[in-house]
Image 1 (cartoon, rainbow, N blue to C red):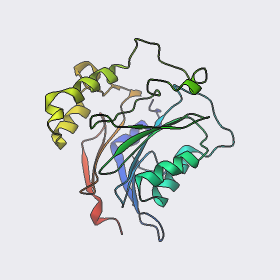
Image 2: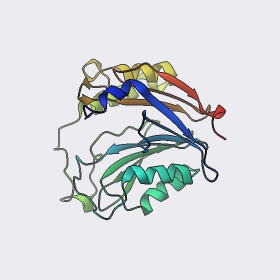
Image 3: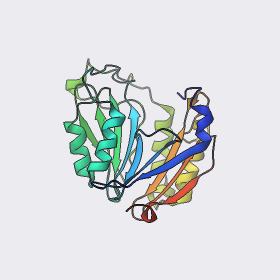
Image 4: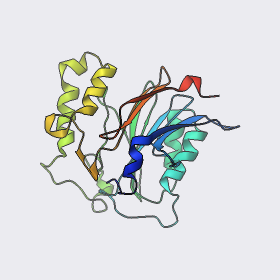
Length: 233
């Protein structure tokens, strides 16, 4: 959900680069004026993106660290995907989260309820995460999380499964294909939802090999492109 107070700023989406004296330089992509990290990319080519996991586990850890504050620390401190995942495993977060971590070779989805942790690997070259923990639910989590009933699916899941299994995607992926996928609404076979104040908000494409990032606010702005290799110090 996009709060009314935030909506006027979405056309001013910003890519802000931090070059600290120690640790990793990184780019943070948020509406202008927001400095907490939900989507970021560092100088080692590690990308991190967060989904709220409250639909599966609405609980909180009162003494946990605010998740977006922790991500700010982790993207600055860790130069590898593996180190980032370890940092997430060792952290005690305030709320349930679904956090994606990727580099130019690998992508994982890290599911972190308020009481546990697991890492999901990409399959057949693809990985996506929604707002519920993926099936199958670990046995030790049953009774502790809200499960999607058997036979029910998020429409985005069905569309993405079909898309990634298509001959076109299996034969190779281009930037234009990714942009086209992100532009398609659910009813057109895609995963985007434009129904303010709900729906898709920030869209980001990273190319770790080239240190390039593309971003936009869906329905509010066009794609922007930033070559981070010229900005990281």
